[in-house]
Length: 348
Image 1: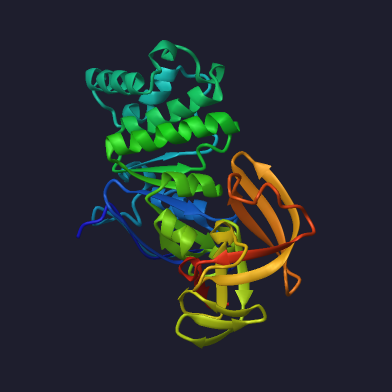
Image 2: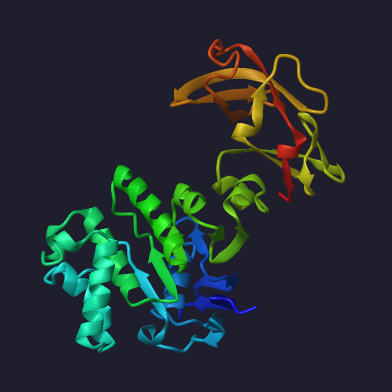
């Protein structure tokens, strides 16, 4: 099968010996929306720049539609890149900024004008076409950057934290527009972000990176529910982790009793929303007794802090309408139930 993008053992080591990216393997199908997610310095932006050709690779191969582009300069690759600061030319008008890539290709004027007109219309920028880019709002500049990246009709659009400079409300609006646009155009998007909500909400698959290494590649739901390493369990969501000793397939013995779950390992990972408040417990359910130490309400979600029998404090999320949740007061005993199917066992 021919993939839009394939990374084969791609790595980047700087002259001083610092390893930025190590043996990165990935296959991306046409029209996929893939997010690179991880903390600062994990190698996600470096990987994006290697795909774009702005950063040389030390080892491995980068293939786009089967063609090895590892040594190809950026302008010859069928990619466009959008940066966090948008990299617009402030002295140019919106139209001139959008047309810049087509000018580099020396496209005939009539064809260039037609493409620019269509993309300006798509992004609702016609009313601002003759205004300078530096006179527009953050949201408008973000749309200009997207229009400029897409007007050259790339095989792959590379986005390096393109929403980072926007305020929270505008960020949410642009997120929705971005996903709808990607579905409409059917272009492969590779999106770098440090924000979990963006990665989980926008992408078809998420690549989680740590210290230049790929920790997990999964669809958002699977990544959230089934972490494969301690780093991912720590980084994604709000999980309780209980260490123990493996005593057979799907079970570990812990200071809190025998815990069952999916997978194999000596560490149980339980999402905060997997707990339920239960007065008596349900047959087959894991039961954990503790003391409520605090609670708060954010919208319709109740956030509880519970101290378990081994003196650890854990986070529990419940719906505000959960029976008994409103009556809970700090200091009172509480029993939590967990379906073993919601528990993932991994190696510590």
